[in-house]
Image (cartoon, rainbow over the protein chains, first blue to last red):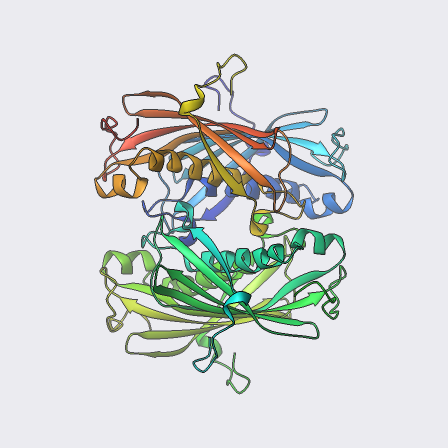
Length: 136
Length: 136
Length: 136
Length: 136
């Protein structure tokens, strides 16, 4: 998350609870860094679900989002059984691109910040504009 | 593996090397038990590949195998960076069912034994006889 | 689950909701069979949590449970976004061994049945009797 | 990878083969984006192994590296059974920080580029300078 990024409007932020699974932790006794990518995905697909659609239905309609960019900054370790909150919001959406920003928190502690860029494609993998209504 | 199981003909056994990945290990500093299921799958799909076909091509031809049963006995822990060998062979094959047996070893140490039953289905998920040539 | 197994007392059964994650699904568009092992683990550790203890605290006290046996029968496929329920109960507990049984359901549909055997070990990996109070 | 980054000296680049596992692929029939983080980790730990040390031994000696930053750009999809090559090199190393850069290729096709920052910590999680000899 860029330093000068303005805070998102709270009503556009989704908060998803994640409890760290045992199998997500590694021998250092912390959540493996690859698990965070999974949690981010859960948050942004829950955002679609809240909006009355769901990724499963988008796929049936021939609209897919592929991850084009993933960036995570790990600030504090997360441990087994931790109750985390993933906060997710849409940063920008234009044409075929959809940028999300994320914070992962444990209570007030900031565990990680992240950003992703999704690109909208059809079932052949060709880039297409995001259909109106797919993302509110 | 049943106690009274006879040893398979060595020429029908495939041996696949697996090096334990860091992310496959848990806070007890051993490979998480769910990782073994992945290693077994790698071994049995390598068996198909050795036979001149591959699972990717079977799927293109409308032949799928779904796992109907998985059974693993864990005998000794496997650790990060361990060089393991998965030994895999076909136990029985009849109609739509395909039974594999497995040993996972680290040198001479037996780490685990396992069995799976696959069922052959078409792309609609309906059970179909295993096509001749799909499994030798 | 053995055919002649009697139904468990409902008050000893824990039910844990699981929503199938996108990354848990494979190209056949169903949950990968290795994911089930993870869901079973979540259910049995939630059982410990419900009992006022938790696996994290057991580990701190030098009590570990290792999986010695895993057996799963897959009956119907589970798909992305499915809301599943994992039902888990203790089948037998004696000495150092703890047997759990499981049902995974989607509504009334039985998706899978499973059994695991855990063995209690100390931090050196040596088998020890299950401490009284660790499992109720 | 920044546009103006100069190519690394080939003798400092490690190349690690990765074959895409079935369970790493998702319903879009491509490798899930979280799998790439695992492949990068395999490449950079193989780099340590090539240098005559290994991450397992570093951990025994009380030296740990934690991932502080992960950035991946996904350029083309990778599919089940693809034979990929992960190219990895050290971009900068100073004090407690170690920056790696990566390319993931399938033959000549560039599948992804990535960067990570590791931070050296002791077993209490406190930042410490990278011990001389740990990274060549």
